[in-house]
Length: 133
View 1 (spheres, one colour):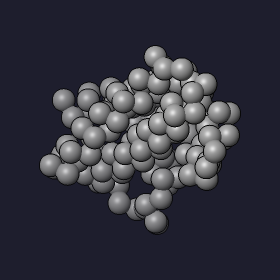
View 2 (view 1 turned 180 degrees about the vertical axis):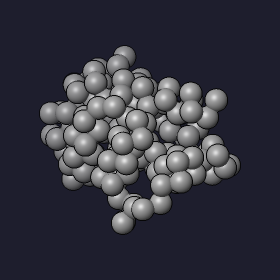
View 3 (view 1 turned 135 degrees about the horizontal axis):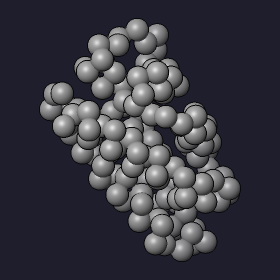
View 4 (view 1 turned 180 degrees about the horizontal axis):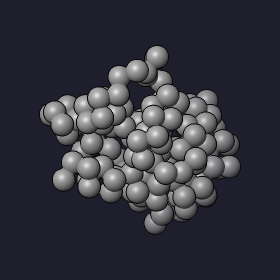
């Protein structure tokens, strides 16, 4: 893997660690909700871009039509980088959060972000670490 991949993967790991701090915070606080929403979106975006890097550089898969997150997630699933259909749901949540101006949308998703999605990010992190040695 190249230096760009290494920087992106490190950014993903750091963002994930920051997001996981939400597990120790008061999720009824609007500032915490806003931060959790932002960190989730950033972590998700870094994750799918890391997936794309791996698919292109490691598996030599370059047949993406647009290279959209949805396409990358499908190919990552086929390559066993991710193992759960929750990733498509995560994409939907990330897209909804882009239009959450008063923390109402994140309130409906915060519990799942903290209890499920963070673990899926860590699962992906572990797969990548095993892959790159």
